[in-house]
Image 1 (tube, one colour):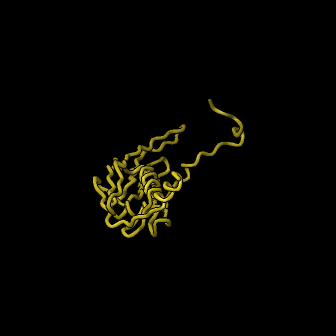
Image 2 (cartoon, one colour; image 1 turned 60 degrees about the vertical axis):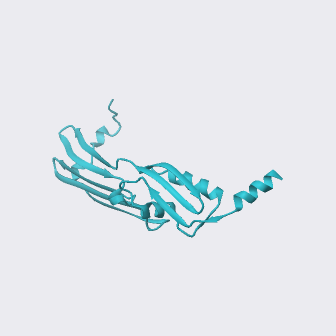
Image 3 (cartoon, one colour; image 1 turned 90 degrees about the horizontal axis):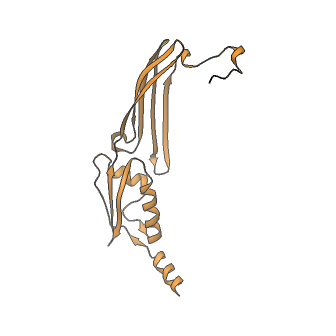
Length: 169
């Protein structure tokens, strides 16, 4: 009997009448809702609410403070994380060197998308990279990734055939 009552409560769905996204300073509410694939008018059961909480808390671009559903109102409170990280590019191998900087932005324009521009100078000239990634650019389930790279020939380390089996310690 308890199992049947539990199943009945779990199966009862309530429509979402309003969605309130609060606490964010950069993330756009529509981008968060697109990522979570939830809309006003959707029916939500207790089991689906738990699944939604789990999915919302797994995003590295913000901290989920709370997610509640009462009287048809879904309230999502998040705190944006620091989203721009400078990445120094410093390498040297013998006479070869590379010096540069990249910026890793994992909440580009508050859209929960990734943009990574990087530039580096080497013995042989300029290298650059531009990466754009959106997991749900077109729909909640279809995204896009694009990578533009220029790497000069000295960026590849070639060894003589005589040193192929020599391991450095």
